[in-house]
Amino acid sequence: MVKFDSTLYFITDSTNFDTETFLYRVEDALKGGVTLLQLREKNKTTREYISLAEKVHEITKRYNVPLIIDDRIDVAMAIGAEGVHLGQSDMPIRTAREILGNDIIIGATAKTVPQAKEAEEGGADYLGVGAIYPTTTKVITIITSTETLDDICKAVKIPVNAIGGLNKDNIFVLKGIGIAGICAVSAIMKADSPQKAAEELKRAFLDLNR
Image (cartoon, rainbow, N blue to C red; front, side):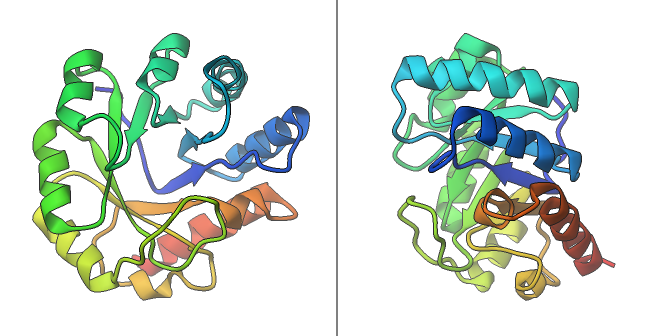
């Protein structure tokens, strides 16, 4: 399996950005210390998704950061991405693992301890758990308590990342919970400077664990 560090997991949102601006902001975030990057596109055709993924992959490879494709294992396979992230309504983790083999990172969304255990047993490499706070992305979210997040961290051996409305000023609620890192969308994507936002968020997370 590809080694990865999920300390600062950046999930993209290209809404309201032209391609050139979007790619610039992706690279700016990588300059700020993003350690894992997920390309999430809910409304593009397969051809559009592949085209954008190829462009993003060229950038992530320069920074030696694994590229995770959201939902679509066909797109991940088509561009040779390092990984794929699957939600509860996507292909089962076990099936994806059978198709992709052991050299691809597979992430899973989990909101309960049973979902987390099932994903781990199916072959998931990491979990995204949340939403911790309400989010401004178009993805429908259900709030996950920090108690549930803590329970999930204790129930599985794979890395767990918190997601959902997190920013440098509110992640203090995660102190003492054994997460491997944090996922951010809007806190980086909508920032005036994605690089600065990534730097501040990473610093805030590392300060949590001191």
